[in-house]
Image (spheres, rainbow, N blue to C red):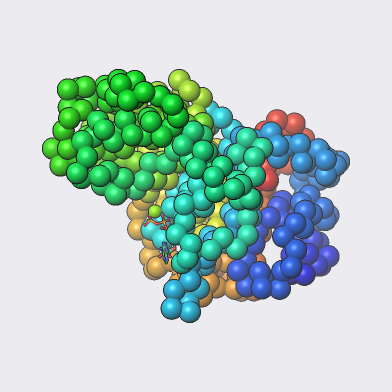
Length: 400
Ligand SMILES: Nc1ncnc2c1ncn2[C@@H]1O[C@H](COP(=O)(O)OP(=O)(O)OP(=O)(O)O)[C@@H](O)[C@H]1O
Ligand code: SF4
Ligand SMILES: [Mg+2]
């Protein structure tokens, strides 16, 4: 039993979720399925009445409702006997047509989360210690590799951080897209795949004649468009976009974002968008998860995060960028460095850099607090903004 399962812990006020996992707790864990969400919320929990009335079954139904569900994800990398705690208990949900932004500094674990969902982590060194991923109700963590190939072809696509790693320098861009089309449409003729590839090129704003050119003949922005065309060639239901516009200049970036947004609306695609860029978040995301040291430290709608940033880390990230309509700035640097992922602090992982840190911060695992409806913050100082009326909507997003 880990500390979170002791009754004493459940007396803590405002605990809204028990899904948090902490690496040091895992060794002693022998049961992956301790579904005790919603139990033990006895101290000042402002949703007390309505949430505790839900049965386990009702909560299970709520979980089923979301298109993508990631629960308790824990990923480590092992190198030279050292264990890097890259993802430390991440849970979120996403509906079709919605975009969730994952933001956070370099090394926070964003790419690892996306690759874990797609099951393309290099194993070893990576190891998924724990976690459940459901796509449209299907358990991806336990799916056969053969099934995952189909899913990666047809349901999930990923746009990788570096467009060049996704392109083959000795193949024409057109044939690469055609190959992607072919992969995703078993049985399609070569002629039809080529035709579709030309359409895809044109859809991303590249003249079809350039089908026969090689990646090096394309600008950085065009290469990224090709990568996006390949990702969209299978008309994915879930798009994992890892810094899709970071390598691009601002004008191209705007075009690419618009294109992704168009696709999203046209096909009702669910999207996880990884970015350092708060301007991109403002333009694209419905919800935002702020990631720090492999954990979600704040989660809410774009408006919650931009208008009421509550975690000291989020506030640090925003620096001089408090407004949604300002899309120019990037994350401003926060003093200090993220913790060593081989040796995470015992309590709050932001503690060493936090201007508000107090003696209570480094003692034990910090739980998420729901500070307003659907807006969560992992900080001992977080307090609910106001007593909310019991609300029925958006249950699917409350268990972050
Ligand atoms: N193949 C690997 N082997 C060992 N450690 C790795 C590997 N890939 C990532 N890591 C480590 O895992 C942690 C999370 O890395 P990840 O790439 O997921 O971060 P990120 O948030 O995507 O960062 P960035 O914004 O720079 O892309 C980091 O400490 C990183 O050094
Ligand atoms: S728990 Fe403490 S150290 Fe962590 S963010 Fe909150 S105030 Fe800062
Ligand atoms: Mg990354």
